[in-house]
Amino acid sequence: MSSTPPRQSSGSEADQKTGIDERKRKRMLSNRESARRSRMKKQQHLDDLISQAAQLKNENSQILMQINLLTQQFSKVDMDNTVLRTQVMELTDRLQSLNSVLRFVEEFSGMAMDIPEIPDPLLKPWQLPCPAMPITAASASMFQC
Image (cartoon, rainbow, N blue to C red; front, side, top):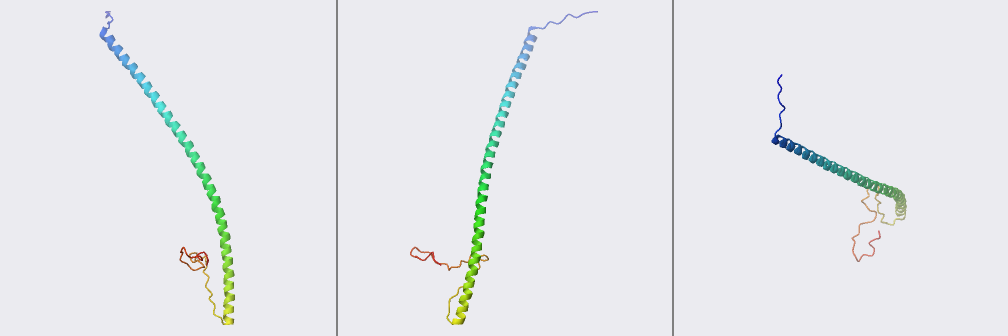
């Protein structure tokens, strides 16, 4: 058997291998640093999202409190409005009764009376029971019907 003598590496091959090892080591360090920056960036993004979620929850809570307050106010105004509508209906009925008495008096006394028609405020809310009066600075009776 013939044996071949082991090859001896030349100096340039060793330098080349050392250069390759050095590049590998630098690339590994660069990759580690890049991965570290990526993890930090990911953690910062996660922290930002958590902060934003907390802020949005706080805003939602405030909005819900406002909604509840406005709902309570609306309910009160709605109840007041119902009371006022009932009172308007009662007063309208009274005025219609008084107008009928006035018509009766007018018919049997022979005296001419100016008996205005009373609009139905529930069906025609835009018609006010008092005539529209021009508003001027000198008018003292502007708030009277």
